[in-house]
Image (tube, rainbow, N blue to C red; front, side):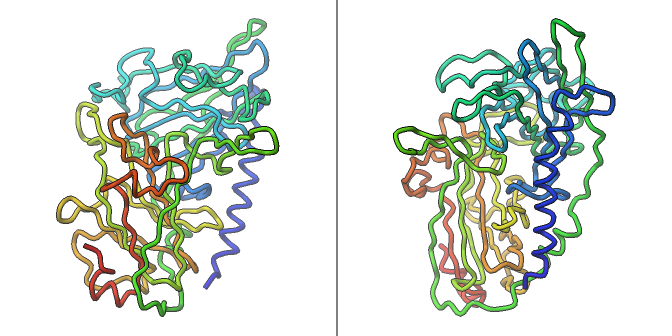
Length: 413
């Protein structure tokens, strides 16, 4: 059943070595041959840290010695979303989302009402971001425009350098959104400005051989459950969380390079409770990628992914734009391995492979909710059941055997 596990474990170890080792190649190294993003965490080739199948990640490091200014310069991509997150190790300390970036030239196409025609082309608007030492300003207070704060860790410790992760979701016509990767430059009163070029990028395959094999394999047993189970999702925060350690508060967060703009519902279902997980949700609105103008929406992006919990890899993801809708606009997602896939699924059902594991682990991702939308995962108070806050937008889970799903769809409405 788990003959893939040694391969996956080896991939995870390799990725961890790359993540830990990569910053050393660029730390204050402006010599010929160094580059801005030594690690491209493409989910097909380096599938770690619970990535989304529709996202691309480029990771580098910015040194922050006294008197030195670091600048990230780039062009606005044609994409659903892009951002820069600054990290202490693998934990976020600050972030700038696309709509928060003021253009140096042209238009920021991610601002509501902006025209998007030039995004991702040679005429795309440009931007310049300063990366500075010091702490991120407290929530609700003013911060300098186009500034990313990476000089202080979550618990107040100074940082001489910060890891930068550049994300692009649903880029077209390529994974970079039609523009070059941003450059990183340094200037110092005692020396000339130096620019670190982006590393040479190889266009990834659209589905690695390893992931294809994971998706095609099945658990070699059937559940003996006789009833439908209704599990409850948990909430997984991306930002730092305060925890009491004796008389002081210590901040901690996920060790998997989370994105501050995302919050997740997570669900783990063991196979003895059922062969099939069915999720029924009413989807929030998202931007129309083909629209000439950026319109307001309830969320910027949502997706549901099946993951392997121990290795943090995704098995498969359903992005919002690919979700088929049924009666009343509801989305039904059926999760199982191929051997337990129900027959005669409806044309409006969305099927996701679960992988050959003894459990099915799901992540429901919500990105950048509008202030007027109060039913996102981000709005769920700590310790509160998410269904209470999310209302009709809560993804209702049902767990049953394949035979039961074929009989009455696990009792879904």
